[in-house]
Structures are given as structure tokens and as C-alpha cells.
Length: 194
Image (spheres, one colour):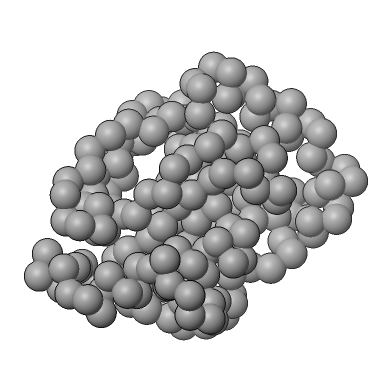
């Protein structure tokens, strides 16, 4: 991974967060410049302790995002997701069933809100080396994949919040909403294992 300084993260209001990211060709993906960018994207995500980061969030218009959930103190209830780089991702819902996910975003600091997410999605993409990815993701992890790929379509989680009364800061989430939310998502994780 890159040892360079983390990239700046675009904050809500930046026009690039509302742009649809452009497809990356296999030839472009293979270039040293794109591979170095992916390293910096991953490094920035880890530095910010996020569960994922999309290229548009670091002022880059390519259709690339990274997802990783390990021992993250911000999300101790999230199942692990090994480092996954998605290039040109396409998500297809596998069920009409949804769950309500309290989400936040590195581009929308200190704000969380309830977002409906599909409990299962088919993920089709290329990995960072151009190999095809085609897999199903279920449960809480499916919400993470939907959140990150939304960024590549110019959509922020606040656009999907159905009830603005659920919006809260991190401190008020911890004080008033976290316990009930964790209880709900632990049941989801137990059901789907993710």
C-alpha cells in the first residue's frame, strides 16, 4: 500500500459527489497510475477508519471503490469484509426485502440516519487486476456495498433517508439509538452471517 499522505476527502456540497463516475477500461485499469491511485484510495480509507471509500469521494471521477471492515472501533457490530476493490461495479437486488441501516459517511461528517437497504445484492465488477467478480452479499454487509456503489452514481446516504427525524450526530446516535440499532443488526448478522 501507498505510504503517501492520505488524499483529501470531498465533503457534502462538492460537485463531484453528485457526478456519475465514468467506466474504467481494462487498459486504463492496468496502468501504473491507476494501480497507484487504488493504493492511495485504500490508504486514505484506512487512515480515515472508514468501511469503504469511493473514487469520487477523493475528487476522482473513475468508477472505483474500496471496501474493508476489520477491527474498526467505529463499527464494532459490522461483520468483517476483507479488502475488496470494485471497478465498474453493478449491483442487482436479490430480494425485495429491506432492512433499516443507520449510516454515516466520511463525506458527511458527524451525521447519521436510517436508510432502507436490500438484504441481499448480486455484486458484479472487476477486481483491481481486471478479474471478474460475481458474488452475492447478504445482510449488513450488503448495506455497505450499496452505500459505496451509490457514491459512484452521485448518490449520498442522506438522499435515501426516508424520515429526516432519524438524522443525528454520532454523539446522539451513541446516546439514544445505538443500543436498539445494534440489537436489530445483530439479529440480521445472525440470520445471514454478514
